[in-house]
Amino acid sequence: MATQSEIEALYDWVHLFHPLRSGDYADFSCAFFDGNFNQTLAVAQTAKHQWVLDGLRFQPVDRILDVGCGWGPVLNAVRKRGGKALGLTLSSAQARYCAAKGLNVSLQDWKTVRPFTLGVFNGVISIGAFEHFCSMDEYIQGIQDSIYRDFFAFCAQVLPVGGRLFLQTMTWGKEVPDPKRLSLTAPEGTPERILARLNKFYPGSWLPSGKAQIIAAASDYFHFLHSSNGRLDYIETLTRWGNDSGKLLKPFRLPKALWGVARLFPRFCFEADFRVQIESARRNDQQVCFQREIMSHERMFFERT
Ligand SMILES: C[S@@+](CC[C@H](N)C(=O)[O-])C[C@H]1O[C@@H](n2cnc3c(N)ncnc32)[C@H](O)[C@@H]1O
Image (cartoon, rainbow, N blue to C red; front, side, top):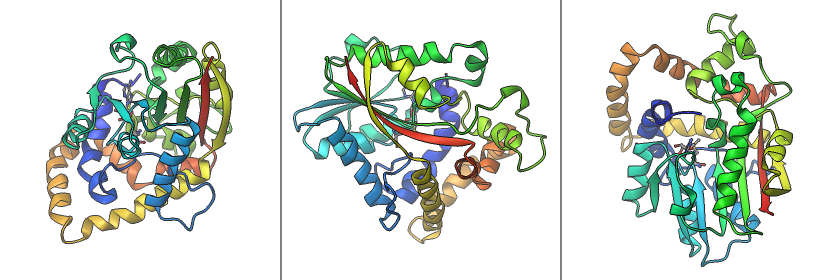
């Protein structure tokens, strides 16, 4: 599983630009266009929050746990609808950001939290975090399924029978890659090279094989309700983020963006892995993987049995 330092190796620098280009409480995950690409990204992200909360049968008094809360989009959506939410994150920059916005956040790993200390929730949401729960090494060791079972056991402990869980995650696409073949020196454009870069972009992270693996891991505690594939929506989300990056050049954002670049200059000079992360972002590796179906994306609802 990605450790706090691996999570921060990515989210600390993303923190300098993502909220600046995408606004307050910026989602760092696929929006819910649901095939309608005439909507703005902001509308599609709000549609996701609505769709997820409705799918959880959210009531204004409810208490929601968000595992992997990022910059607080779901916490804020719950607050706006009159509920209470607690977010867990492994990024101290995100935790500080959420706390400054008056959101209830805890810098904790779900794996080390004792669930009873959190209390009981009416629903659990985890968007774009499951990808970080199993590392490539753990996959090679053959413990991916047991990590996922532990996650569902954790969620089950904070939910009553009938309580719902929403999980959104990237998955592998047509086939699960062979970790031994990933190489930064493989020919450019091959899955081996692209995935080697993405493995540096998301350190300590390896994807689930697909929906079936996730449903099986959840089955001790959760009944699978329904899901929607978000591969095309993710391609669109990544396109919109790319377009929005141009906003960083606007006069009122540019000084902060330049300050971010200046802060990262030493990392760029001295950290080879960071340079690979930048290269991966520059080459749109994630988008290429969705386009070529090397990766896919699932949005899944479950109910506690
Ligand atoms: C791609 S971001 C998604 C953030 C947010 N859910 C959104 O949609 O914008 C992944 C989040 O998962 C969190 N995360 C990853 N592994 C975690 C763990 N083991 N425990 C708690 N949070 C974790 C990261 O800190 C980060 O906030």
